[in-house]
Amino acid sequence: QKEVEQNSGPLSVPEGAIASLNCTYSDRGSQSFFWYRQYSGKSPELIMSIYSNGDKEDGRFTAQLNKASQYVSLLIRDSQPSDSATYLCAVNPLDNYGQNFVFGPGTRLSVLP
Amino acid sequence: GAVVSQHPSWVICKSGTSVKIECRSLDFQATTMFWYRQFPKQSLMLMATSNEGSKATYEQGVEKDKFLINHASLTLSTLTVTSAHPEDSSFYICSAQEGNVGEQYFGPGTRLTVT
Image (cartoon, rainbow over all chains, first blue to last red; front, side):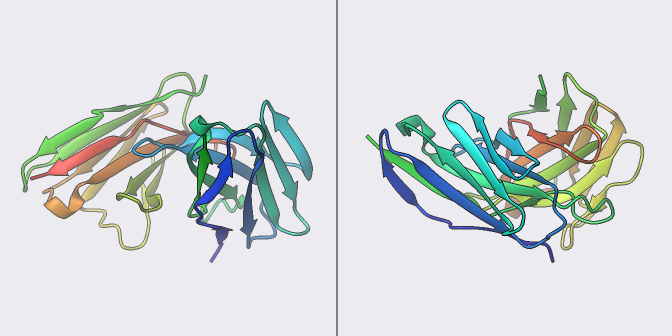
């Protein structure tokens, strides 16, 4: 059973701070990793994808991947109240005959004005 | 790019009737489409995976005769909830993927209420 784990939160940070969201996964063969944001009552929206070890930056968002530790994180700099949402980590184990995507349960982020 | 639409965005139906939800990839060809269900304050639950031109693969516990999925083309998949009951009321979300690796792009979801 391939698993993706996240701290369910809520994670509360003050406006302007850095929010750090973490995710671990069980399938060592996983190759593709994604972060989605889901506002209450809405569908998930892709924020970042990362495929190689290291950091990938896009605006205020930085995804970090460490395949040896089976760990992927998302940093949100200069957090804004509009960033308050549930963040879903997703892993693609590249098992074409099994699960395609495995989603974590999500971490609820609350950015306090 | 990578836009996925769903129709309708919300629907109310009476118990015992059937409801069809459409999912379209508007600017790419979706070899693989997924159907999820989400109850309030709960996680996404994958219902089934469909590949264009072949039968859908249903997750354990999802009744394939109740939730009919058709992926007739590279841009369209439909989910039909047959003989709907109040417990089927939920937020149904589709996603689409080009190939069978890479990003999944989600539609805006369909909120189903069965009375």
